[in-house]
Amino acid sequence: MTAQGGAPEAVEDLLGAPRARLLGALRWPATTSALARRFGVTPSAVSQHLGVLHRSGLVDRERSGRRVLYQASELGLALLDQGLLRSGA
Image 1 (cartoon, helix red, strand yellow):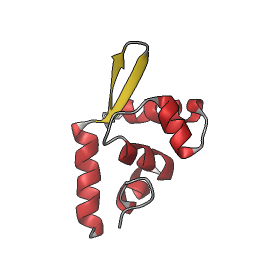
Image 2 (tube, helix red, strand yellow; image 1 turned 45 degrees about the horizontal axis):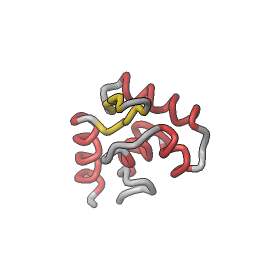
Image 3 (cartoon, helix red, strand yellow; image 1 turned 120 degrees about the horizontal axis):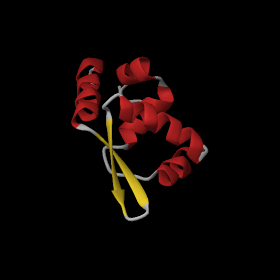
Image 4 (spheres, rainbow, N blue to C red; image 1 turned 90 degrees about the vertical axis):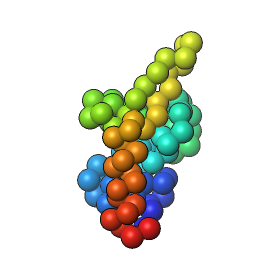
């Protein structure tokens, strides 16, 4: 099964629900502000979670002018995809 936000339940068990939802949302590039609006939380909360995901190698970031875009890395996508396979989705 896939949990809200596009992350498999197995990935939520591993990362925790907020980080798993962020990772699932990052199949496409997004800014911290856009993610905060999407999930109804503060940009600082999103930034803290993104920092952990980035340091773990699950998320890449790229500066585009004044904006920083985040996107799931190959490792992050593999984790999401394997979680989908294992959860039977």
